Image (cartoon, rainbow, N blue to C red):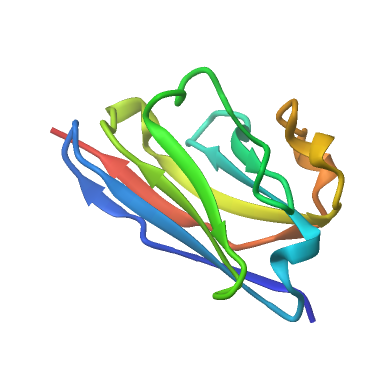
Length: 129
């Protein structure tokens, strides 16, 4: 059974940092593209970042470029989202998602949420003064 479990969320002040983790089980990330999404109350789910199965290609939403960094450790079967210089508008539930896809072009454009078929349950990130 494919499973993704996010962790690392929490409360942080503006300008602070958090590192989210997405641990996979039941499959290996070597063959999967990974995406991070977020959803704030009353707002639509937003794509934040993605990484190709090889890790060579990454992409980011304009709102997080230069502040967030996505990575994956295939040996640990875990993907990460390093979030720096956090802002109150970054507050949301963050989800990781996966889809079996080994094409390097997978992440040249941020894939829509419907491209992914495995999802975690999310982790809450709250940025407050």
